[in-house]
Length: 321
Image (cartoon, rainbow, N blue to C red; front, side):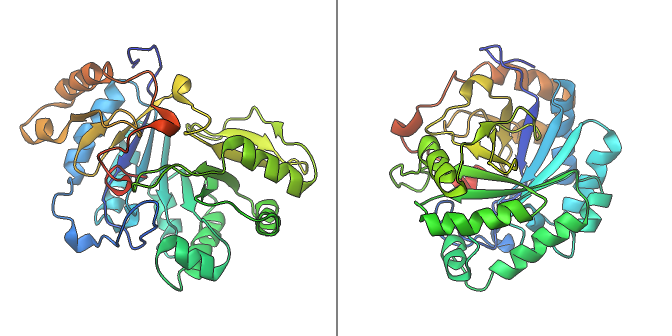
């Protein structure tokens, strides 16, 4: 499946729920509870939509939220996706706090890879990052459980919503080097009405080189279907950079997003969407839905507007991670 600019779309990110037990300030203003979610798609509805994406050539699916482990039917959905054999890769992005008791089970049900958000390794700073006290240990335990479950890969996502001191970076790099994970640094995006603020790709790269004591070199290995640029630290350990504002990946974009209310969002940073759930609830087949998806995809723009963009109408928590 190609868009109007000749880009092959082979990856879909599916937000199962807006609910989350954290309230990170760059994402949402307050905690969204599972009880507040009344319009969630059923497993059957998601399977119809995913069947359509399989027909148009999508190879990878990522389950996101909110916090996807708060979706009440996630185990049934995973089991059914695995049984179809439709996708080469089934992954999930989670805050990790609910993962420790479920990692082994999720892997057995078909989850290949997991990405875990971790914006600080210091308890007080982490509480500020997630809007709640006393949460760091549950996330660290989730990371340890994911590593022990032997997923194909475990990735750590750190959103750079502020500038870090060199001492903080030095402490961070100790964990980067020690843990058998792929660490990615993600540029802050102004979804909650804030202005864009750094660090930019070049600023963060320069700081890592200064603190690590040598140049970062490009790594050509591909770690999944995402947009990250991978660079090797002087030790040889690869880290990822996802800097969509100051270092656009639009020319290689290979994905669309599905919101928890059943809309296909053509670009994270644009409000162009296509309604899928209404067609499904009106009895559309996967074949008819696939034709609708292919037509809608031709509206995908060449690129977003970068740092100078207007704020998207949907807040981050209603788009999906």
